[in-house]
Image 1 (cartoon, rainbow, N blue to C red):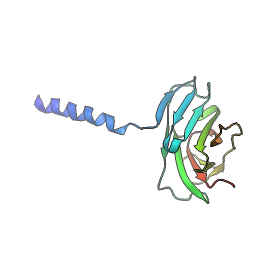
Image 2 (cartoon, one colour):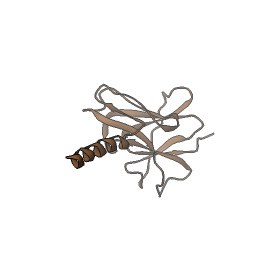
Image 3 (cartoon, rainbow, N blue to C red):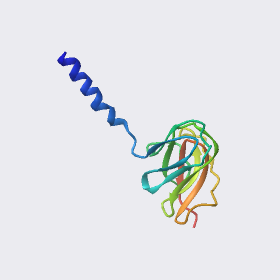
Image 4 (tube, helix red, strand yellow):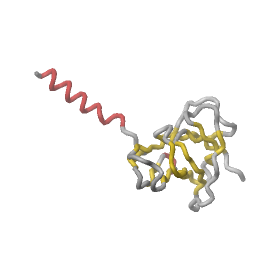
Length: 139
């Protein structure tokens, strides 16, 4: 009996180790998820059809990155197709969200720049969640 009780405690203690610091569960109501480096993604209302875990992670160690890549962010849950574009925002001066890839490997596609971006940020539209390569900002 003591072994079973000890095993249950170990399992319960291990449950909290896989949480992501930059995540939220969003549904058809949409919302905003803050990420590392003061990045964020805004999911508009009705873009999701069901409650979904949305997260932002800095993605390191990828190969075949686009030229001039400074940082890569994974916005998940990877592969989720949105019914309306989300806006991924990066603080101005850090980098420019420029290329998108489903799994963070080739092929990389150009991201449409979001024109209605808040002051102090550079933004791009995202219609499928995946990896975003940030490149040097145009001067």
